[in-house]
Length: 78
Image (cartoon, rainbow, N blue to C red; front, side, top):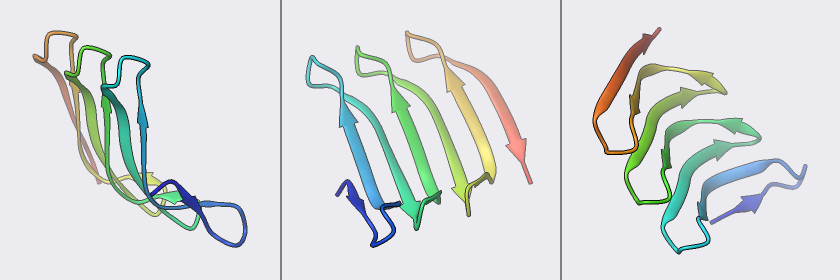
């Protein structure tokens, strides 16, 4: 987890945490490009947004939530 490849590019799964210990984000990288699921969280632990990436570009559905965890936006990427 949280590793770089030989070119110092992010590669594989990454996570970071808020100072209170709750997960801040989890993401996946493939040789420096976002690839796969990306989730970011508010400090209270609720999901902030969820997206998928393919080769560094948005791919699929982006969902955005408010601080209380209610879905406020859904956007489709092709």
